[in-house]
Length: 325
Image 1 (cartoon, rainbow, N blue to C red):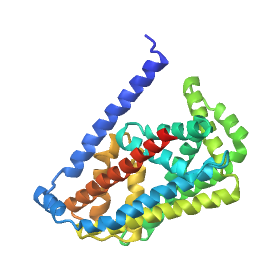
Image 2: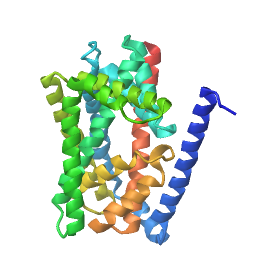
Image 3: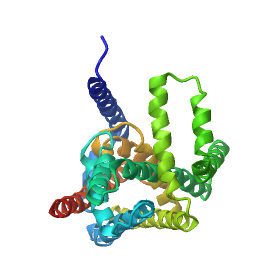
């Protein structure tokens, strides 16, 4: 029996949700295994929460900078106010926090596209490209930051160099690809891939190229790169300050490694908020830096709760602003 496209989509969503729950459960078990619960609760009780007075403003400002960065894509098509991009962006981040399958990406693109007459397809293309560029940035940031760590094994050093090379190749491809659209699609169509799968992938390639064409302007590309550096440095500073809550310390390169690992792990199918996945990553990354399992779990828990509060506040305010217009 052949399923209708609508039923196929529902089945795919359910399958991804099931896999996400399964992986979240597995990662959460691995993260909590051997945890000293008394130490865990004491870390929460005696935390220095006054440091939140510094991290909350920095994190909120950083979300605004992300909106400025996204607007570098959008303004290639039409001049849209940064504040409109910010509200749509925060609705999207709130959607990602509470809904499965990164549904917030579609939410922010739909709101911004319809409210400003840009069309959802174009805005979604820019959102897709922004996320892809972020992945490449995270690979490069994580690779470079790891090289500053002492006592790394030769195997890990070699792996990091390969990751850095792949990141640079990806960046080079992104810069060149928009100028070679016809060649890329022609080469792709020659691959022995089933037609249904080929059509979907070709659609993603075209969407990516549409988004990338907005960065053909050198000034716009430079602005995007500079804003990306500012965004990840600000996030790293938040982590450097944030771990003081549990009387721990991180340097900038260690904080960037944590960010890169968390960012790349978000590609794994998971529950909303990346429950389980983020706990496992935090334990895996922070324990080699001298954190106990309890401290690593307490810190990532505080970070996740704080992020929920921030995106919920600005996201709900964004929904109110968008509906008011």
